[in-house]
Length: 94
Image 1 (cartoon, rainbow, N blue to C red):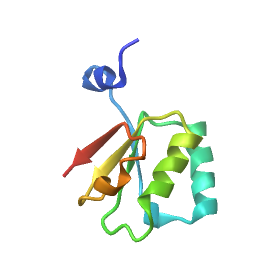
Image 2: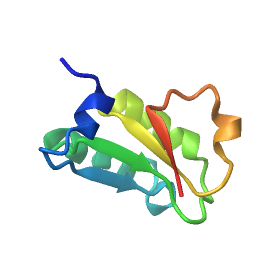
Image 3: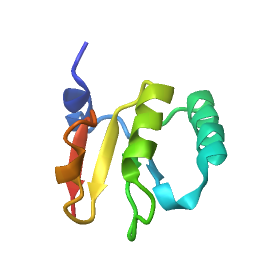
């Protein structure tokens, strides 16, 4: 089986990503969202937002534990420096 990165580079198949904004929900809604994600999973999850008032680490950890999908951080500013202990599949820089 190809690695996820090899699968992503295969342009013969379209991919669907879901953007999760940590500021867009509370904890109970996050659990509900994870349930929906598992019912109809996209190919990958993107986590980020323009302002990020809530700790992004909580969202990333919940998504990693609650799904089997790759999670990428949308880096809008240098927040990943404080997140070295979080297991991400990658960081997309704008």
